[in-house]
Amino acid sequence: MPNAVTKSNPTIPHLFVLELNAGCIHAMNTDGSERTTIVTGCHLPDGIVVDVEAGHIYWTNMGIPSLDDGSIERADIDGKNRKTIVPQGHTHTPKQIILDKKGGKLYWCDREGMRLMRCNLDGSRLETLIEAGHSEADRKDQTRWCVGLAIDPKFGRIYWTQKGPDNAGLGRIFRANVEVPAGQTAATRSDIEIFYDSLPEPIDLEIDHKNRILYWTDRGDPPRGNTVNRASIDSKPAESEIVVTHLMEGIGIALDVPNDRMFVTDFAGSIYSARLDGSGERNFLFAQGNLTGIAYAEV
Image (cartoon, rainbow, N blue to C red; front, side):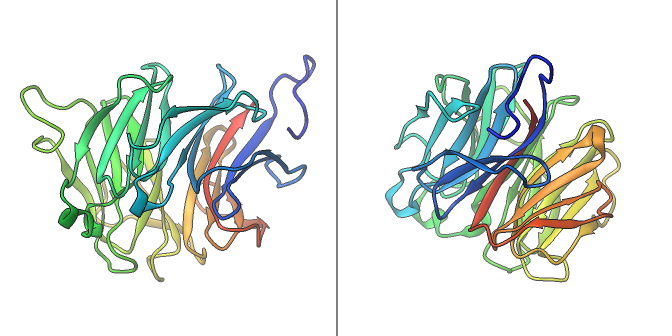
């Protein structure tokens, strides 16, 4: 780990970044310095989240979609004591993953599984909350593919993206209550609403809970794609605001709200930082492989 934690300096800002093609997890300082590879041999990793209190990282392995061999793993923050908590065969193509520490749950999107799922922190009590499709014919319809997600604990809502085909302008962001309504199922629930539609190709989500703003990356074509976008989740403007442009297939996003900054990865291998309004954008690492998920944590 860069800048090892000591008693005199108990918490230091770090980034945890997934490199898809190399199957690695890297830890680094927030300026990209002191990069250390803490986990290797991941099976196409995509989403990552940090449980600072427990000293754990969790990440998804997409696997190969045609083989239905996705999984979720956990390790200590330094990469040691690695353990599979959701084995292959239980989630198809897991993507972005988030932590509900208070509720003791992990939530993630399953792309080719066309669903949102959750489990306990040890992988037990696996549940499907949203099911956008089920059959093989459904699986070929990329408008059903669930990719990124975020939870608004204030109102008990969950937001997620269904990206649509590449650059097709059919991407959507949905929201619903976290819990399935009584008497309904993940496939029949009636509380789902479209938050935004006709998006180029929305990917990962993050919520600024203090200011009640949803942020997301979009890997579709310019001018609305290859961007970071944001919108109030309370007033929901007719059009979202584009705050960062000229990404090369933007994927991961992590917010550090107290310090007014965001961190973004793209598939061309760059890591960017910017203020939450998009100003001061800086590409501080580039050509780092195919980067996917990113997490910010003070550890």
